[in-house]
Image (cartoon, rainbow over all chains, first blue to last red; front, side):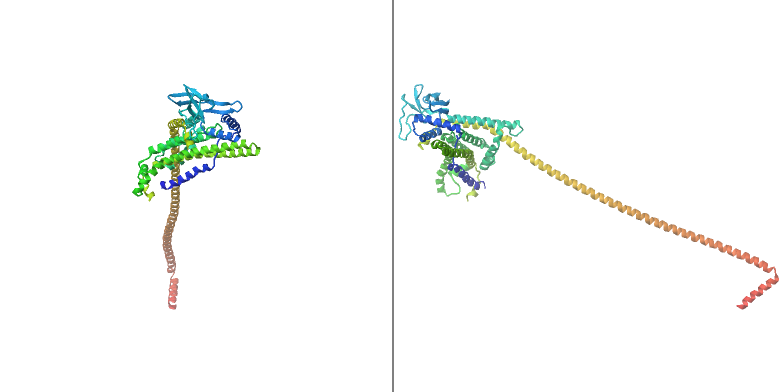
Length: 378
Length: 166
């Protein structure tokens, strides 16, 4: 019985997962922030030399979508002054090289450290000669050596902030139970229903009453981690963490590792020696099934990445429209549209966190299925 | 795809894995375990409370039914007792009446017998008296008559005359 309704759930979940691909949304809709963006974008223009507003906006959006080696809140266009915090750069290049990102002057200068020269090009650090010249390869990216970059970037700061926030929030929620006789109190209380939701609607139905407990920590952490990072991305601070491929890759890999390590005999049996099909088919099915185990987390990775990235692109483009129209009708319309999409993006933030957790739970559940399939196959 | 691979930042990946795995274990120890335990305890508590409330309700119902039954029995007993008492009363009254009647009859009988006796005695007395009186009268009369010869003869003749008439 459990089996028969799982594919259905999976299809529904997948459909829901695809929904936001049609719609979108993003952060910054605050009018103050808009000013910041203009300034920022113009600063970008200063060294990339785009002439018209359109390419300036494009440049700015591209810049926003990337991780950043400094935390810039605002830029003064005339003086080229940046308001923000420099972040530490940590490189592995024949030993650890640690210095502050202020050495790059936001990509305008060549940083010299311990006799090595580095250049910041589209938020990637390349090792160069003293003249700082980048040789462009055939695919359009510089061919210079890229030292392994362990810098505390803006995204790392975002992860740390969210982690700290989660630790404090749920730590206080946990403490409030013992203090208040089993009833939550304080700020964390707001999130108690979500914790219960993850347990009752995501973990138990997909994994089963028997095994769900060992996955709860991972599912709860990943749900709130993605949710808070998505929401952080909606705030006018310019974080785009969940829209970064490195983040979603790591989350998907963790889901894959946990599924693989905790899967039971039955799961592997279904992959390598599918019961209930003719023997030649078993040889054909095995590689397909094996590939399927990798494709599942891969789809998790792409879904979250693409949703968040697309949301940011669309919303920022619509905000950018305000500056292209420069008329009160067009700009007002753009503002209204951006506002509506921002609200939609809040929904997407919850939805993506839900889907990622839900599908992870589904995969864990598949890895823990007991051997009662036979009747379902025939 | 080239862009995607170029965008991939290995450092960020490492940071993310380190922080995230650390976060999972920290939260597991300091948040999720206590939270889920507390919530479970609470749910168990609620379940138990509901169950015991249900039991108490059932017990209450049982008690009420018992009370009802006892009351019913008591009422029945009272009715029976009342009925018995009434019957007894009626019986007693009836008995008393019968006895009184019997007694009365007996007394009347006795009285009648006594009256009869008295009457007989009185009659006997009366007869005796009358006979004595008649004898004395006859004696006196005879004495008187027999002292006078003429008168005696007259009487005999008169008597004879009566006989002749017969």
